Amino acid sequence: MTSINAKDVAKLREMSGVGMMDCKKALEETGGDFDKAIELLRKKGAKAAEKRAGREAKEGIIVSYIHNGRVGVLLELNSETDFVAKNSDFKNLASEIALQIAAMNPKYISPSEIPNEEIEKEKEIEAEKMKESGKPADIIGKIVEGKIDKYYSEVCLLKQPFFKDEKKTVEDLINEAIAKIGEKIEVGRFARYEIGK
Image 1 (spheres, rainbow, N blue to C red):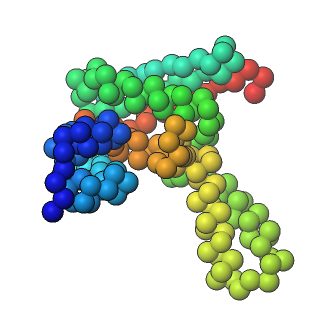
Image 2 (image 1 turned 90 degrees about the vertical axis):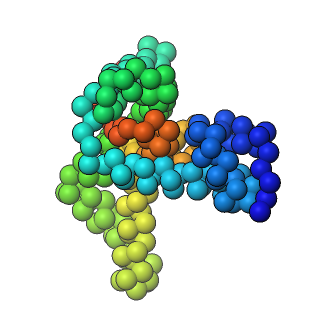
């Protein structure tokens, strides 16, 4: 078993924002490999989010962000308790998500909000593009599904790569916060305004 020193644990904590003991366990489980440890912590964050999925998140905060007087964002980020809504980690998460919305201009929170007609139209467009390729129908179907996933990552906030670290999505960012804070966190709604649009 690899011996893990406090300096490595502190470094992983700084990188992930997760508690010291969880960082130490992740490093031990992955033999001191930082990339694998971060991946492991992300998976644990997703599991923690799943456990809390049935809970209601009726508290929270509304944050605003204005960029150069040209782009404005209002975001409602929800938590289970007002105690968490006052937490600095929660407020920082809300600010990061508001910045994401300003920078990446999502239309929806998640794929479940996209009207079926819009998804079907996108599938049609992608299938039409593939007709000339001569590929078998089942392969075209898989390619179209991949294109739809890419479409989700463009228009859905939770599926977008986080603009400060494209190795993770906004959903990963929220799951990491759920694991750290210990409460359900979800985006309630958002509005983005841009001059002339």
